[in-house]
Structure formats: structure tokens, C-alpha cells
Length: 314
Image 1 (tube, helix red, strand yellow):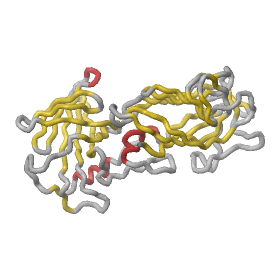
Image 2 (spheres, one colour):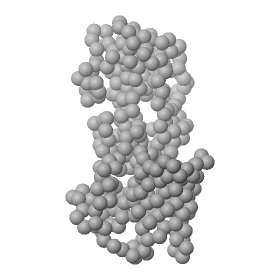
Image 3 (cartoon, helix red, strand yellow):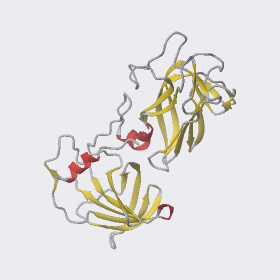
Image 4 (cartoon, one colour):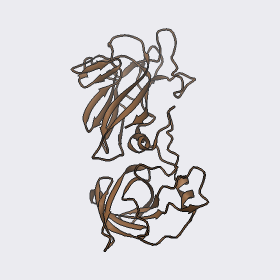
């Protein structure tokens, strides 16, 4: 999981805050929260008379209080008792760094069942407070929204390394799988543009729609060649990444972009399947292939792989 730079938030926390009285300046009620690396929305309402807070955090109901700049809420996900305490930092600060834009920031901790204590920080929705949000593992730099919604996808890979020598090798891992959950607002469907690069063998698919190596829906039409699959839970859809013609005894370099629809909070599943336990090694029939700018370049990958990077979210 890619994480924002917590050190940047801690630095902000050490800045001198100009005192402000409760209620003198309203604070945001819609935030993006990074809870120890898990990103999601926080939205709440405040009763101005009682200071009582009601809302949702990461899709789960919360209740608590907001007194001045101190927020305390209770959350009960999966029968666990979480207590969140955050301090909202005012826009007006002295000695701010050059990149700070004066947005609200919240930082604090949350406890799980009164035992484990973990950090969190938040920025108001639509803002970044100058916190670096660049992605790692790819050539693109993610905007604030792209980092929040789909940053967990940036740099994820399907990897099928060889466990033996030869043009056809034994698969070291026959069915690799990775699972993650997107951030963002569960009420919204986002258009996420992804770039896929790697070295793969071709596979035949049927029952869906082919767009180059990209295949939407359907199923495998061959029981021997490798399957590379991307599944999204909401809106539910399956994509295959190496569509072509099964039976060709060589690998192919790929580099293409596609845009998918995903709902905030959707589950994303990456799977591959060396159906017969073997794969065509990294060869175009004469030599191994290197994908520029993708690890392990300038060396060739020993086997097959695909790297997925996020280009934009809207």
C-alpha cells in the first residue's frame, strides 16, 4: 500500500498555531482520511448547541463531539470498538513552509479495542494542504484525488517468474493474487485511467469485447495458456490483459492505457493463472525483452509480468 508522507504531517503539526476561539471560524465537515495507510472519506454534521457529531468514516457510522478544534468520535467496524481523536489545525499559521497552501489539516490517533493505537491524518476534501502526493513505482505523478481514490493501484504488478530454464519454463507461482480496496466516496463512480506495461504470452478469450490486448468481460477460451485478469467489484466488471491468440510460442511486450469505472470503496482483485503450470519465458524468439522505465530494467524480467500505473482519476 502506497502511503502519503506522514513526516510532512508531523512537520505541519509542529508549526506554531495562531490561537482561535471555538466557533470563530467554521471547520470543514468533509475530509479525506489516511488511517495508517488506509484512505477513505470522513463526513459529519455538528449540532452547534450540543457539539454532538454524527456521520460516517470509511463508510461506517460514527458519533462523538467536536469542541473547538478537538474531534472525538466512536466507530464500530466489524464489532470492533474504535476511538478516534483528532486536532484540526487552523489555516492561519506562522512560519509555514513554501509548499503550504493554508488548507485545514487534521492529525491524531485512533485506538482499536482499547489496545492498539495507530496514527491518522486528514485534509479537507478538494484540498491537499501542499502535502506531497506523488506516486511511486511509475512514471506519472498522481494528483491529490488520484492518490486518494486509486493510489493503492499505482505500481501493482502481476508477476509470473520462471522456476526453470528454457523457452518454456515452470511457473514459480502458478496462481498469484493481489487484493486491495479503493479510497474515495462510496456514493461516486470514478473514471480511472490505467497504464499497463510488461511482457506476456497471448491468450484467447470469448464472450466479451476485444480492444487490442484488452478484453472486457467473457472468459478464457483455452485451458493451457496464461490468464491475466483484473476484477472490480463495483460496478462489477472483469478485464483480461493479454488478449490475442493462444498457441504462439513466444512472449510479447505490452504498453497500453485503458479507462475503467470504479465506485469509491470498491474491491479490486488482480489474478493470474498459469493453467498448465508452465509459461513461455521472456523471449520474442530471438532475445529477452526489456520494458523501459519498468523494474527490473535495464535487465529483462525472468518470466512474465504486467505493471499497472494510475495516470488520472476524474
